[in-house]
Image (cartoon, rainbow, N blue to C red; front, side, top):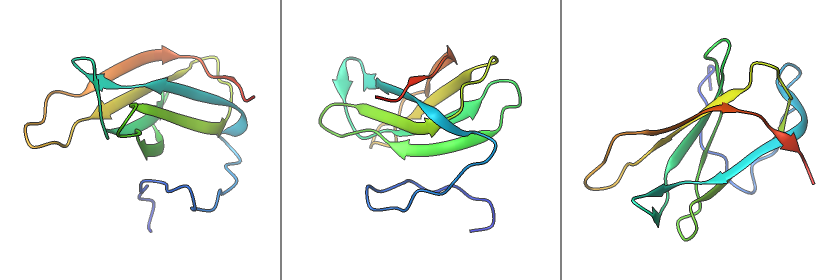
Length: 102
């Protein structure tokens, strides 16, 4: 895939990430004006701006999760994109600290 990230499906095999892999996760919901939907969500390392993971939120709830990531002092930021018929500006959540996985 030459470095490109693609949306993960539940059946996609998990690959070890020796730099950003770990026992933590970031989980939240994303909505547009309070309405959940299927939005592309990308996770970035805050200090370097490196794109780490990408997924789609659940269409019914807007829930998404990035699991098995490392805890980092600098934290992360998440950007959610609306790819609907009338897309709106991206939503950004900054200074996110992961929590231990359950």
